[in-house]
Image (cartoon, rainbow over the protein chains, first blue to last red):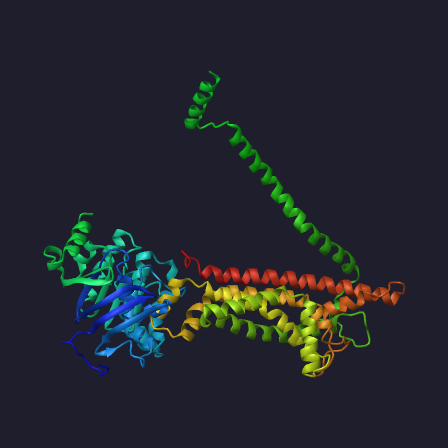
Length: 259
Length: 308
């Protein structure tokens, strides 16, 4: 189980019988799901279905919230990230995360993008190269290349969110977790971020949590539907939208797509 | 009939933009009275301060000279050079100690202790702040002077004053680090920052202005304390030559000199010196407050937009 190297038919991440408890309350119940390379999986579901808890359990961010107990396993390249010998800090350096609200630090644009890198590297040239690459990939380079030394707090909300993506990209992770990344953005910024996500799935495993079925339809290859902490159904995006097997899924998707 | 017209008029006022009802007029009038009362109360609050500063300046300024402040002559008792330097020395050492204890304690409480343990530590700090300084002076006397056997000395005064200043720095450091926005902490942790990396690279720059405020506040309070000093050292007219030497302190000098009889010219000179020392202390405390305002304002500008 803990041997390095890919397992489970080449899945980069493999969630197996994952459960999360808050005291007596079951937030996630026996979720099993694989994530293949170069894919964008959208995790959708109604508010309170456990989708945020699910994505936060993929890089051990759940442990930051006191009182949550995790069981089951999450394999990253065949290694269980919840193994007792694994340092959560190292997990989070390989599995990047972008949050609901832009979370830039009160530093310059450059230092924000370099934050994750500086935790590991010290070679300035390397950092410079990676930061430039990450900003280009996040679709932000043209807008900030002349003001890398300005405070990141002076950027717009959409730019801040793309800067957060660049920060996650700069450490060259294999997996990026996106927890409702457009929920604080206006429609134009949302559109730009969706375009960025579509480009990024060529090179990374993207896992997107969203309450917006329309967004899932636009960007994802695959939709996983969570309801009351359980994985109800998962399948290719088109199939899920047009021929959902479970009535719960159908109800959620039609209810939402009418909006 | 009368009732009918009453209800008619009240329904008319619902749409009227010119509400002349008794309740509205009463509310507006009350607002106006409070609007005048608040500045008046403010004046009442600052009058004692103005009186104090005014009287001390009036007593100190006629006899204050550059020489009084700078002469470190050991044969003269009418100069402040030695007390000023001694005060600076005590303040420097005790501030360093208090910052070390307070900052480490504050960060540990905010970041590492369990809620329960943190609650106990915070309660103790609040208790220490509320303690009369003379109690802490006796603690210093029994602990450092007697138990540690340091005698009435420079080092005993430094440690006692440091203990006195620590909770102020602790409280602001604790508050500064706990009030770093949650989403910022999550972003740092989510980027793979280890606890020490989060504290040093993310939290410290954000908490810095507040921590600085606490340090300056503690210095302003510490430099005005008398009891912790007079109980742990004997007043000296010379600079301390060893850690165990007696030492002078501005507030202690005021404490001693102000009690002198003004019947003789020598006594009057000592009382004058007390006023000069008091004037100097006021200037220093005001300066500390102004400096901290300027510095923390500059740092807070950098954080604009962070708490949205």
